[in-house]
Structure formats: C-alpha cells, structure tokens
Length: 224
Image (cartoon, rainbow, N blue to C red; front, side, top):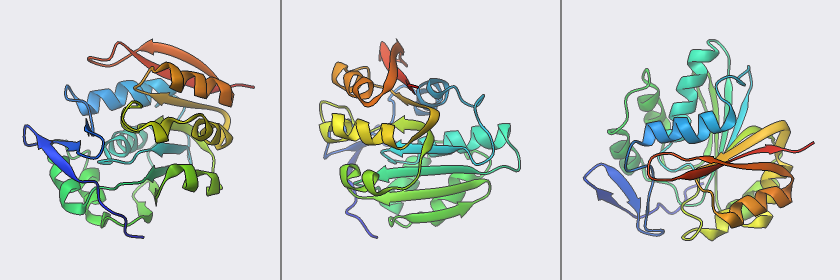
C-alpha cells in the first residue's frame, strides 16, 4: 500500500526533520550511537538475541534502528534470522530515505540492500538474515490487528509533546498485549505520561540514563 510521504526539511544538509512534527528523525549528536544506547542496550541486546528473535517498532523513519539492530544481530548470530516489524504512518519517500542514508555507514552493504527494496510501499521484505515487515497506517488501528508478538520493542515515535497519538495509554496497552513473555521495551523519552502508560499496561518501568542531551530514557520489561 502506498502511503503519503512525510514532508521533510534537511538540517545541515544531512539530518531529515519532519515538518509535520517539527522533530528530527534521529539524534543531532550521533544517530547510530543513540540507537545503540537506547534501543539495543535498553533492551539488553545483543545478549538476548537468538534465531527468530522478534523486534517490534513504532516509527520506522529512516530505517536507522533496523540497520543498527540487523547489523548487531548478524554479528552475534551468523546464519540466523531476525524478524523486524515496524509500524509507520508517514513513510519517507525512496529519494529521501536514500539521502538520509548517506549519513550512515554501509553496515556491510545492509544500507544499500534496504534502499534497493524500499519503494515507499509497505509489505514484507526478505533480506539476508532478516525478515522485515513494514505496516503503514495509524498504529492505533494497525497494531491491534497484528497477530505477532515482539521480544523487544523500539518505541521511537516523534516526541510525545508533538506526536501524542503514538504514546497514548491505549497504544501502550496494545504494545504490552503484543509483547512475548519476558519481553522488553525501550524508548529515548522519559516523559511521565509515557512511563505511567507503560506501567498501567503491565510493564515494570525504569528511568535510566539517556543519550547525549537527554538526561533520562525509559526501559521496561513485561511483568509476570
């Protein structure tokens, strides 16, 4: 399904900024380091990786989180397959994604492999060691219809103050309902409403040191 692309501007010629939400797609300091700190370390990865490990994500954006996770998984689990499902309402066009990717290393050609299959339409993509599923539309509508469960969640919508729809208590409850036993979630934000929403959904929530300019972030593990 083709979806309306997110209109963007470029900061310093290389960092895409959503004009819809007035927020950059990745850290102004170091997007790759931020992903590793927030989403890998925040979910105790790569230590938890195993074959057929499943990651769920709210906000596909430039695909940077995918590239970092896929690269780490390939290094930790050669020959195994990572399942990565991302929910995205306003995807980047192929041209904008390719331009954003110029700021990233090749990740052993994974960056170019993703660009080669990205058409701006959702669907499933089989790449070496990766089963990627990108689901377009409002996650408040699409996540409840998803039949899968994630071992780890990357909660990476735009800032809660600018994109509150992707952080609502009802959506956090859906995240919990689609989390595997002993599953985790992590996000760059430590906003009180987000932490309370995760706790109400059944997560054990902790505020921990953030990345770069952010003093704190949130780690969570499904209770029980």
